[in-house]
Image (cartoon, rainbow, N blue to C red; front, side, top):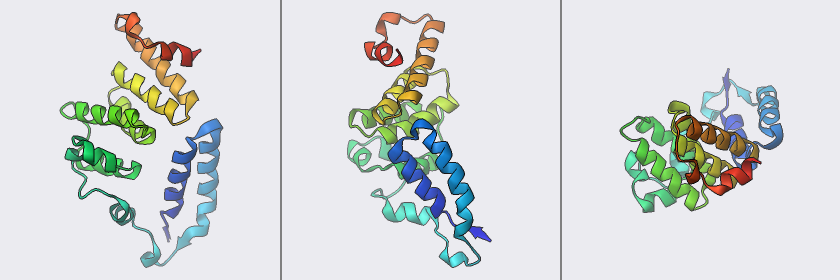
Length: 179
């Protein structure tokens, strides 16, 4: 039996809209896992192909890293395009600045979920990058994930203090949002 991917897709859409506030994400994912049995089928022709769904709904011609370097392409990127770009161009030290610049662009243009997706990948692979934690906190705050933002800001503060960085450079909003 093949489990249709519609359940997961629906969950991702709901979570990206809600921001996973107040444990809702965990409750939702658990209930969807339990309820997903309703979507089981033996007919593979009825299953949803995530790659086709993304490519049919994407505004991009391809998923190359070049899409993150052009402001015109950045404006066309949607949250579901980002994992495809990571697949095409895995994050490494040679392209981290491209991903980070794209995340900053997304934050400045209030595309917080897109920024959050990129920054979560960066901080997972390179947890010592303090500026990325600051930007992640801003993206989470803008996305309504205030609890997660506080955690990211606290990690940013800890890294700044540990690295003997100039604490005067820390934006006031960080202290205001952590308290």
